[in-house]
Image 1 (cartoon, helix red, strand yellow):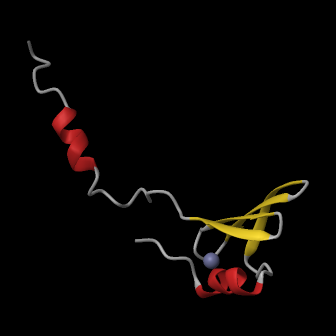
Image 2: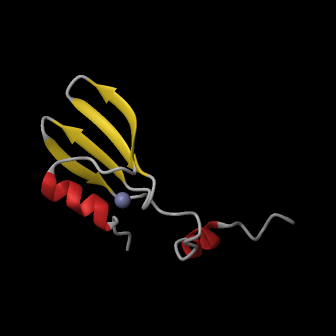
Length: 77
Ligand SMILES: [Zn+2]
């Protein structure tokens, strides 16, 4: 499973963004950050930090097994 880095965990505790958080978007009370270290997205809204876990990294190929079942084998017909 994906885990955020220690710095990101400290953000949740301290409430302050760390050095490697990149501000992606800022709309009034809502800010979206991305951690350069662990690639976790963080959402800061109304004084509360929320973690967006990195969505399925491309190098994970376990889930492609299912799609193999869907691959049609009868194209030659
Ligand atoms: Zn991080």
